[in-house]
Length: 270
Ligand code: 15L
Image 1 (cartoon, rainbow, N blue to C red):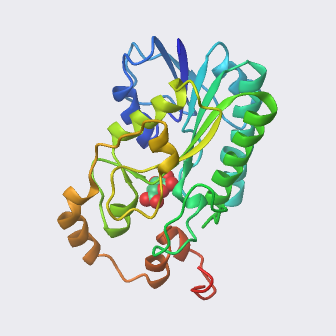
Image 2: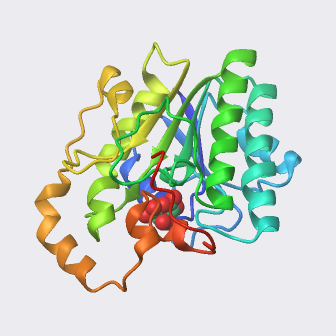
């Protein structure tokens, strides 16, 4: 990988990656709707609205790999999700195909499968069960990934990111936490591993309480270093201070499930 584009440069994950990916590839181009306030002089930046194909085409021109973090990163009104995550993701994959980009790492989310109960351990072959319009948009992105991999030969890795941060902040996050260094490891597998064609990995660290079987990632050499259990006492103490949420507490997606929820918890089948 000579030249890599990372979208979503101004977001929470993008801002951390700007430091963590420094020097990993000869040229990293950063992109977002807005210029990040702390953009360094040595960080090439292209402003692009993902909803505009011509702007996305300019952003992807000449790169070999893309890390697509851009878009709306939580639940939102349909118009917002439609423009940023549905049209935006399509524009990204289509512009990549036209520009002959070789690889894409797509930041999917645990919310593509948030309506599985916490007591069930799922793998990447279980069908999507989104918990929000946002989760639906991530499932759509995963579907685009398969289309562009099998029809057009792109090498695509979808990372179903759990919760990215320095430490898990509550009980649910103990199961889905992803440390910054482990995310870098997963991105590098997606951009560099010679055997990648189309894969879905869970973006999770070494979490003893994980909801997920991340065997495909381990097969590609992923060896997470972050151990959620090292932070269990603080996370559980913080959890005890949260308001009760029976729906969010049952399902893996937590508050994304209880938000707008107006039916009953389905306990069987799981
Ligand atoms: C996500 O997908 C969001 O981008 C992030 O803000 C968190 O809410 C995370 O999921 C989570 O589930 O904790």
